[in-house]
Image (cartoon, rainbow, N blue to C red; front, side, top):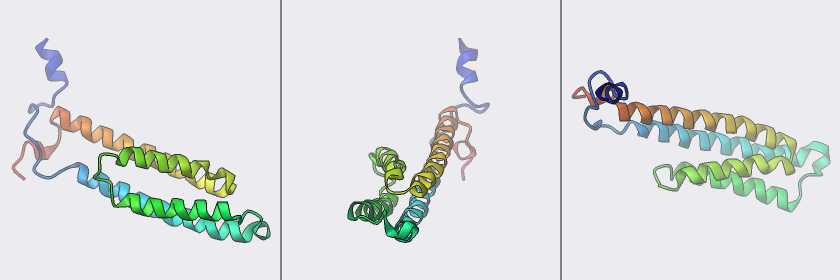
Amino acid sequence: MASKQQDKMGPLGPGHAPKNDPLKGVRGVMAGTHIMEAIVILLVLTVVTRVDNGEAATTLNLVYVSGLGLLMVVAAFVQKAKFADVLNIGLQVLAVAGFFVHISMGVVALMFAAVWWYIYHLRNNLQERMKRGLLPSQHLDI
């Protein structure tokens, strides 16, 4: 029984809570990703207005793209909030739903969906390492 417990922990035990928040960097990456995605989504406005003589430049499409881009900029500043994960995933679903605006928006949104999946994978890995006491800042007085 004791060996199972030790398998779940690092060689130095659980350690203490890190002095610096390790998730702060992950939240920064999430905020930066929102800003980059907002820029790319807002660039869809030029595609919508110029491709096929602006056939896709309906009021609904222009408001949808503009609103989504603005919401992504706002979401970049609330990554510490408890609802940030729901907001991130919800905005990504809305971005992927942008296929109805133009196929280019949907394709770009799918690429960013892969980026968000990887960010959450890294965050889960970091949280697991924290639980097991594998972060150097949990054992050193840094």
